[in-house]
Image (tube, rainbow, N blue to C red; front, side, top):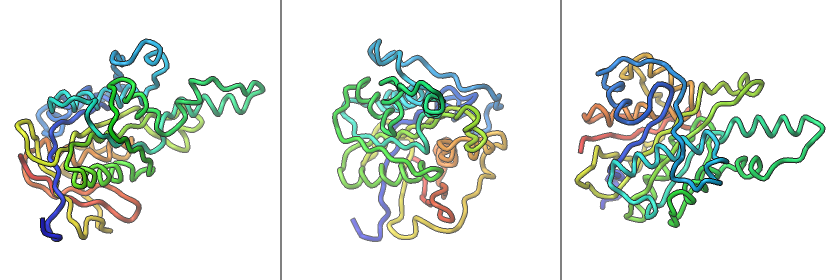
Length: 273
């Protein structure tokens, strides 16, 4: 491969969960403009793949991450136990953080083990490994509102370097008040992409990351998104990936930009399968 050729990854599966969007099939229709968007609180599926003890301890962000990750794997016909994965989150479990702050502000500061282990940034990745039995490498990162772009960069470069599929999961949950006033995330949301090094029978599209000029100060354009969905982009960190999902839903070649560290944006090309 020439040093000037873009790094390529194929999208073999997608998972999506957001307010009023229960799966990728629903999201694809909305992003295409084939159906009207009806706002509703995010409906979190029960994490049946977890053992009973872990299921009781699973937080909102864990339930969302498991749902979209498994949806992407099912769509691709892939065994999640065999996949390296990248988990990206801007802040982790907002409700758990709220509960910890309440405990620390009170007189009884004894923190339960469940609260403690759900407070770490790799909690969702750990539950994923428990649920699926996945033992390949797992990368967990947080980059505030740049988390989706940072996770995508990590996943694509891993696919290129390893020559093996990688599952990307981006997930966040909202904060109750008073933290919500400082970090107003609307609701729990998540999406997943199963990226592969070569085209397969279920490939949905191809991502091309330029080796030079991928990070630019030029902002992306949300006018291709239905207005109701464009409002979700700033409302929840994982939904900063919606322009990419819209390009995959449309099935046509497009330039896509995702917000990175200001003023930079991550630019890449999306091509049909």
